[in-house]
Length: 453
Ligand code: NAD
Image (cartoon, rainbow, N blue to C red; front, side, top):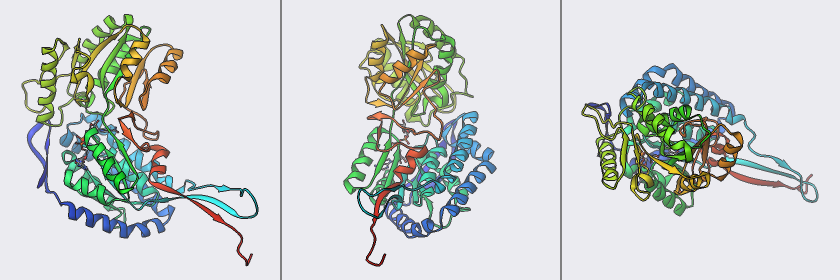
């Protein structure tokens, strides 16, 4: 099978075509990574720290080239692509300090003499499976913590982001010892083979695939984390600065064509916020251009979005702004807001991963919170209000894994735990210190005096 990726803004532009290596090649790469792991761990904290720091430098040294490749391969607007490259360098630099972190703690014995301590050790080979939407940042926030604590890693990127992953692999290979980080392009076959062979599995992608990956990994008894799709809400309280809220929400609906797991797809206006918010959001979305929105990833994605909007309209919804795929080259969909979408319509229940959102009216705060929580895909929710008391009270009642007050639902600092709640995630959080826990296993060591002491 040939893996191809095309430029979403110009589908005649073939970005890359490579032969998928097949399952056997994945097993062989895991075997080589396993053989390299002992040496990588034994090289010590200083060597691992230096290597990760040099990858950060290499990313920075190639920043404009990498940003241009992200734009070309996945259609991310240039400003966001530059932001992703900067974030990628920051992730590698942040985890370059991690090898020096304490790996355990010394404890007192309950009775008698002895030395008791805990120590966290790497699992072995980390199998990393990534989606296409953050083609450098997500592979990096998986690989950097895995390598920092002494694992080696095999990464399987999404087919749509193959060229970005291969370029990252080249930059890393110039710095790392052989077989410490292998990048194997491929699709479901290679992904499943990696899940079947790795010692720890980290997956980010769609809910259906992720659940199968979790089952396969837990069936083998290996640790697994999965970060999945979201159905993210924005709650606008009556006291909110409506213009400010509309700006943030429009960015979260249409930024990168809504193709962030944390993008807003449901806007919930509480009481008197509804009318002014509707007006401000229509204005804000109508003003969005290609520098913010960009194309969606493929022809299928565009058709699915347009069909969903048409079906909602047939079921009684009204289009407030946008609503169709413009007649132009590239896989573009207009930033779209719909009102009166029936509560059970798929657009109100499932992730569509595009610049399309539904506007709901909630009579009061209780109804708004109930509506926001009425999904298993509880990843990120934004709350818009001038009242700190209200913000904190609402944040406490939301199921979401991430809550952002007076900010777009999309985005979180790279050094904080990242992930969803309920059906939007499985296992330990990504990013920050949580990732260091995930890529290690604890040991408890009890040393009692021997006869010779
Ligand atoms: P996807 O599920 O189609 O693919 C994800 C990865 O899984 C790809 O590398 C793919 O090749 C691989 N894969 C496919 N079948 C597999 C199998 N049977 N076994 C193992 N691996 C397999 O997702 P996508 O379209 O690349 O990405 C978009 C999705 O990712 C959206 O649902 C989005 O919400 C989600 N996402 C979630 C987060 C998060 O942190 N929660 C972040 C980014 C994206």
